[in-house]
Image 1 (cartoon, rainbow, N blue to C red):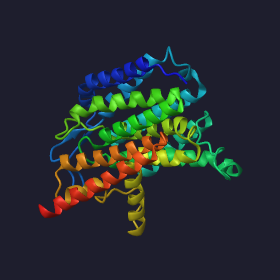
Image 2: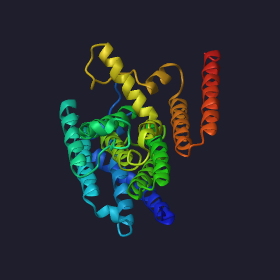
Image 3: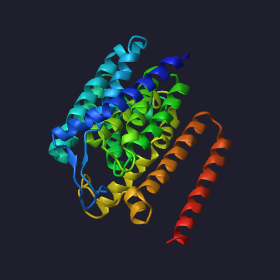
Image 4: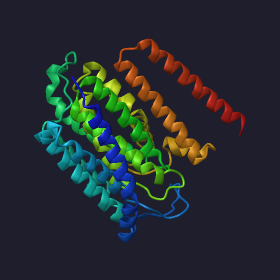
Length: 341
């Protein structure tokens, strides 16, 4: 399948530029509505920082979609309309949460509604190519909804250090973009290109020390787009490998969330409760600076993304070599840290 590379690059650049330009506007809106993150025990900021930077990310993403819309027919399908409706709900709930701190049960309910909207308009994880799963096709809808809710919360949970969620999502979206280019899904490529550009456009003002946070407005939107794009592009094209590739592309938020759920269940705490047990918290508590912890987590995300692309390209020898050197790098890093304590 042919791809319009110039269009994808333009879409990426549009999202990048619009997000960068509108981030100060998002900061003013956050201050006007008093959506500010004040220092607290489990937080990492020592000064009040405005939230709702996600507004700029959403504006950049929408601008990119508008640029692409005349040339991509998939933007006029029921499936894409369902995606937009779900995105609107996610952004609205995120903005309200940044201002009023909504309860977890209400947010979970709204995320479930978003999942229902998405699957009812044609976006589902398709298991028809999987051995034996063709007999369990009825599970496609609930599994897709769980996947969407899971990724929304996964990205939201890693948004704990300056630049972490935006950077990790940039890596994940670029990885998904490459996977979708290989699979031939034009719509998924368009969504991931726009998301990558928006995230990278937000990063300059979100690096430590951050001028603004994306808040739930941004983090839930990022998770939502990643979830839907993976359903449209990766799960539709790679059969049994799709779950492996999707998890590798977004390994950090998925694994961190899985361990958080297990940790809270073992400690008899609510699954949706907040704590300081996430990987980024553990790295900081171990003595790494915020910037060092973010760099380490970027490296982990990048390595898993590269492995996902190599597997999709069926270059297994290169995959093994990359994984081997990555493990050596991790061991060297922790050995160095233990000697410098």
